[in-house]
Image 1 (cartoon, rainbow, N blue to C red):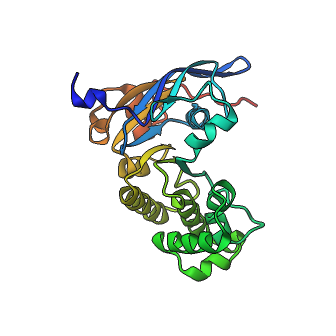
Image 2 (cartoon, one colour):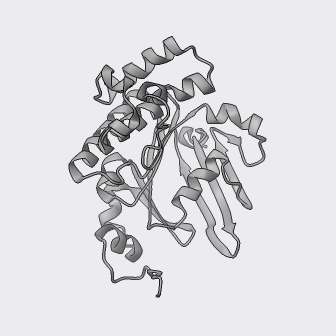
Length: 262
C-alpha cells in the first residue's frame, strides 16, 4: 500500500441514498475529499447538492450509505456525539444567512460565543480581525446586517465561516445574487482565506466562473449521482456530454429540463 493510499480522507461519502417521499434526490452518491483539497460540486437547481451538504452536517439522515468525516462514521452518531465533528466545520451559507437582530460582529462571533463559550470581549477581537481579513473595517462590526450591501453581507458570512479557524469549510452557492465583479472578489477572498487556514473545502454552485476559481477538483451531480469528476483543468475536455452542456449553459443536450406546465 502506498503512502497516499494510507491517508484518511477528510470527507468520504459512499453510496448515499436520500429520498423525500417518492422523489429520489440522492441515488448512490459517492464522493471523496482529501485533506487540504478544494472540491466543488456542480449541477442544476434541485439536483441534490444542498442535500449532500446537509447529510454531512447531520441535518438530514440518508436512508442508506456511509459518511465519514476525518475517518469517523457520522450517520450513526447522536446529536451529542456529532458536536466534536461539527466543531471542525465552518460554513458560508447561501445568501449569507445573517441574524438581523444582532450586530455584524456578533454574527461573526456567533459560533465562538454560542458554540465554544468564549467571552464576548475576546470573541469581538477575533470577529474584528476576521472582518479585516475579508476587507471590512472595524466600524462595520457595529452595523446591522440590514445596513450592508449584498457583497458586504457575503464578506461577513465568510468572516463567520473562518472565525473559529475550522479544518473544513462548506460554501453553499457563495456568489448567488452578486454581480460578476463582486463574485470574483468573493472568489478571490475564498481562495486566500482557505489557503491561509490550510482548510479542506467542499462547495456547491452552478456558477462555473466560481467553480473554476475556487476548485482543485470539480464533480458534477446529475440524477442523484456523481457522473463525472476530475481536476478543474480537465473539465473542458471531459468527454461527457452532460458536463459539456452544463458548463456551456446550452438549452439543448442530454440533460432533461423539467419545466412546469401551466
